[in-house]
Length: 309
Ligand SMILES: Nc1ncnc2c1ncn2[C@@H]1O[C@H](COP(=O)(O)OP(=O)(O)O)[C@@H](O)[C@H]1O
Ligand SMILES: [Mg+2]
Image (cartoon, rainbow, N blue to C red):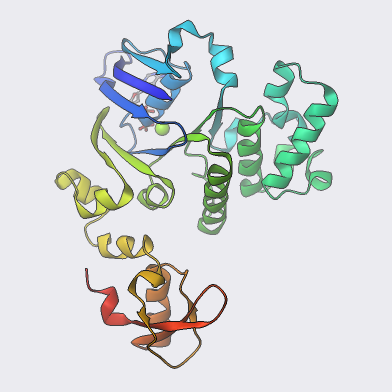
C-alpha cells in the first residue's frame, strides 16, 4: 500500500531528520512509529501525505510515486489526525467533519448522513454534538471529532500523529480500544506515531522503533519485547517492565488449568494476564477461578503460572 524507499530529509543545518529510511506498509496493517522526541516520526508521516517533501528517495502509494499525485488528491485518500489542535475552532463539529467531503463536492444530504454516521461510530450523540464548537468539548470528545474528520471521506489510509497525546489515561485507553475496533471493522491501513511504548504495544500489528531518523528495529509487539535487537531497544521498551508488558499481550485463557477449581469471585478467561495479576495482588490469593465467555466455570489460574516466562 505504502512503499517508502531510501528516503532522507534534512532541515536547515542540523543532522538529517530522516536518514535513508525504507519501510513497506501493507494494506490493512496497523503500523506504529515510535521513538523519542526528535527521532523523525512526524517527518516520516508528513512525507507520506506530502506535507513534507523528501530530499532523496521515493514513496509509492498503491504503486504510484506520490510525486505524481497532487497533494490535495493524495490527502483526500489519506485521513490525517493530529493532537487536538487540528480542529478549526470557529467551525462546528459538523463543519469540521465535513471538510473533505465538501471539497469532494458531496451532496448536502450525503454529507449530513456521513456526519451522523461518524459521530455515532465514535460514540457521540449526533443531535447533541453536531452543532457544538471545539471549545465546548472535552479533550476526549475533541479527539473523537478529530478521528471522525480523518475518516470522513472514507480514506484508504489513516495517518495519526500522537492523536491521543493530550488525554488522561482512562480516556486514552477508551479511544485506543475504539481505534482498534474501527481498524478491525474497516480494514483500513493505519500509520500512527507515538512516543508511548504502552500505546504502541497495545495498538500496533507492527511496531517500528526509530532513533535519529533511522529504524532501529521493527516487528510485532511480542518480537520487540522478547527479542530486542540491541540495548537501545531493550532500554526503550523498559527493562523492568518487560515481564508486565508481556503479560498484557496474553489472555488468562492461555495459562488456564482446565478443570481445576479455586475459591472466590471468578475472573473472565478473556482478561489479559496483566489484569489477572492485578486481581491476584488485590485479593492476596495465589489461585483464581476462571469462567469462559458464557460465564461457565473453565478452570483455575495459578499465580506461579504467570511467572513461567
Ligand atoms: N519544519 C521543520 N523545520 C526545521 N526542523 C524540523 C522541522 N520539522 C522537524 N524538524 C526537525 O527534525 C527532527 C525530527 O523531527 P520530527 O520528525 O518532528 O520528530 P518526532 O516526531 O519523532 O519528534 C527534529 O530535530 C526537528 O527539530
Ligand atoms: Mg512528532
